[in-house]
Length: 290
Length: 290
Figure 1 (spheres, rainbow over the protein chains, first blue to last red):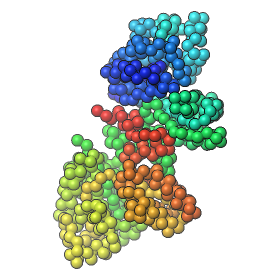
Figure 2 (figure 1 turned 90 degrees about the vertical axis):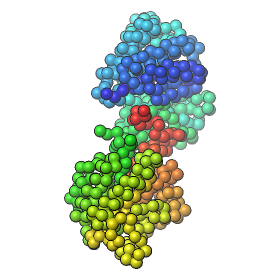
Figure 3 (figure 1 turned 60 degrees about the vertical axis):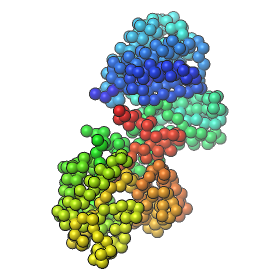
Figure 4 (figure 1 turned 90 degrees about the horizontal axis):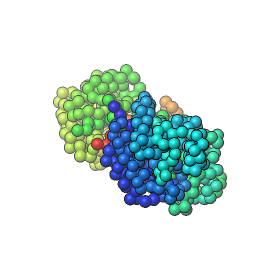
């Protein structure tokens, strides 16, 4: 049986001792594959894999560490968030593992809600994705809870004083991918608005324009849900054209976490001009076949 | 223990019944991962993996099938060749498996020479690579044998009447990669001469310019020995620039066999503008780690 993946996002991207402590808590209980910290987002994204029990244990320990060390009242960062452990997706590595991932998210939510006393919202995209809970920020979420407009799926019906809330759930794999530009933040916002699905851009693409003051750049920060419907290399080429038209330089891209082999192979095929190139043409991946 | 790979090249790329018969002989005894037939080269390249015994059994059976079905006296094709089973590389998938691959090539050579009565030359690049044996074609090889200038490592000191000779040996992985152009064959030859190492081009790149009359194109046919020293996407970009300068269109590329994950990841990183992207950022490959 394949492991499940989880890609929890924690609201700390500057203090490496906290990032390391969360990584240690996660990595002692499941296989930690990647840590991506961003000081401007003030956020770290961890990629881990494991069976259901290992994953729940690891995530509970990681969230406990975050609750001990992160005070959202002091937190400033470019990326929207409502929790110290802001969003905890459980990701099936094969589509038919989605029920396993959903059950795992619910087990995790129950423990976090009851044992740690943090309200947990199960997300259910597209209507109730993370953005549904984050809109208007922590203050607005507190007000919606107080008004009874929203109720958590697990835990108390009020925010945790320092850790806010946790958004958890099962979702299909996505690629978190950012393109950095040298120019005004308005340029990044304009381009983000053009490439995202909501603005008539690429299907399954969500995008925000953000400033990265620590490096003097701005960023088109994206989630790409379906790399077959919206190829990464086409998005990058489109952003490059739009940036050029705005007189803004494309400095480079960054991947948050890991990329599925199919998406990387599609980009390689485009760069190399090989029609029909896909992961079945990659030796190491073929050696995996049974 | 990892399997070994073999990438035998047989001198038939038009008659699918012969290609299928060779594939069946190989695939019954080892894992056949890929078959690439080219009617203009009149040549097929098979990619298979297996342990030493399986690989030797499969290759002997494939070569026997080729001897039964291919008559080199009737063979016409764009690619240089001296055998029905022209070249049989044994490829270690890890560098420290090179001695295993060498021992396997020698076991194979002894059987082919003694049991099938075909002279086998062990190659030893760079001085004695396949081109050393192919220069001047079959007639020149016959003359060099007759003059005692060359002696086979296994088998008789004269060519097999219909099957010629077999060039076998262990070599590091390489990428066989062709770029197709619409224009005169001279353009392909000029570009091949510019990109290959011998012409001051990319290190570890061998290249030929060939005509592909069946599709009305010409081709820069390459072996890329070290994709870290000579990145495929840079070679493609260079060929595109040279083609444009010659007024020739780059139609597309083709991979012969499979590509190592590292080479595909490097091309993907370039297309996506992600600095430092490599195979460690590909999820499926990380799941392989122990």
